[in-house]
Amino acid sequence: MCYAACGSLARLATGCRCQALSITPQKAMTQLYLEEYGRNLAGRRVGVACREGILRDNLREIVADLKFLGRMGLQTTLCHNLPNRFANQKFLRELEKKLTATALVRI
Image (cartoon, rainbow, N blue to C red; front, side, top):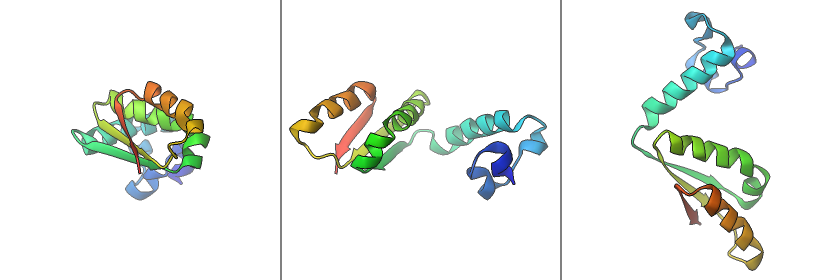
C-alpha cells in the first residue's frame, strides 16, 4: 500500500509512517530516506558493485547516487568490471572526472 503512496520499496519492510507524520507522502519519503541513511551509514564506507552493461546504461543515476552519498560525508567505492582496453579509456576518464571523491576499483 505504501509503495503506491510513497514510491518507496523500503517502506514495505519498515512500515509506512506517512500517515503518522501527517505530511504528504513525497515529503515523508524524502525526509525519512535522508534520516535513515544518515543514521545507518554515518562514518562507514559504502561500496557499489556494477557490471559493465549496468554501469553504462545507468551511469547518470549511479553517479548521482554516489555524489549524494559523498555529500553526506560517506566514503564511497565503485567496483566495476570494465576491461582495461583502449576503447574504455574515455569512459574511465569520464568516471574519474565525475566521481573525484569515489575510489574506482576494477574487479
